[in-house]
Length: 322
Ligand code: UDP
Ligand code: MG
Image (cartoon, rainbow, N blue to C red; front, side):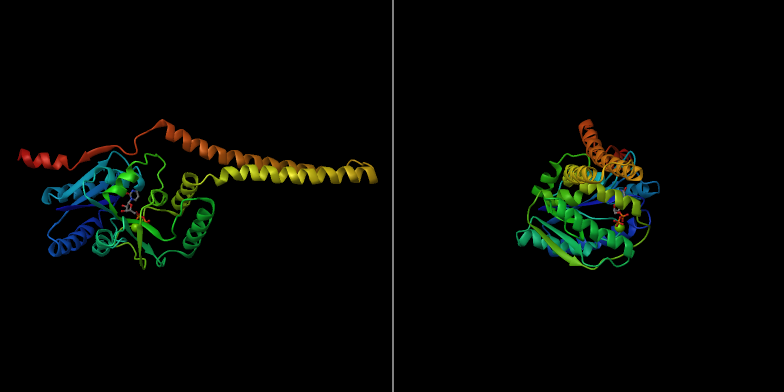
């Protein structure tokens, strides 16, 4: 027997969850038919939803013994959701995918085949188009990947997603990364292992709305840079050296000029501009230091990545009482 865990982080997904459940059941049902050795568990993470997502999960868990769920005490973010899912999954293989059907479950049989029969440790999808996304967003996304791959040793593949089919070994490797500031695109890549990329066209959300605003995405990309690159720290030294060099040239220039033409008091605006410019540079670099310091601060607190308030045990116990 082989157990495959399906891990699904959910945040305000009441509209799409029933659709998702039907679709994943259909796909895994077909897999089971062609391979009776397989069994599945469906592990939903309710990431502090404010709608009736939790009620739906309770219902599903009550009628389907393969459905498990973990409900957080508040919204901890998708990264925490995925971590909780991986940590609590029991399968020999684990699939992580979104609830909104943007990660089509129909790819799972293919992924299983790559991992099981072709020697890969992980199979994932890579979208080759960004259809249904605004132009500005795509532009920023592309720029982010270019910058990121220049300044970080960890390769972040453009269009790679969190839709992953992994072996238990890889899951354990990911879980061994206990960091609080989690940037999974980096983590997946950092642990290594053989990864198969399946290319596909982007699909839009089946129902509901995305929880990611442009601002959130932008902050998330900064998160990625600070988590997987220390290049911004080096930027401070570089700018320092550069402005020292410029200052040296100016000093030589002024000495020579004074010796030849003498000194009349002038150049007040120039001084003010220089002060503002250098002051700005210094604050900018201190800010970068602050970013790393704040991340270090949060890491040293060793706060839990998530706090579970309820699991499917609640529903199971009710059943037993009846
Ligand atoms: N999600 C979550 N916690 C959050 C935000 C999102 O668990 O704080 C889940 C969400 O329910 C979905 C997945 O993460 O299953 C991806 O979210 P979304 O579709 O909003 O993001 P996008 O597809 O636009 O990247
Ligand atoms: Mg989505």
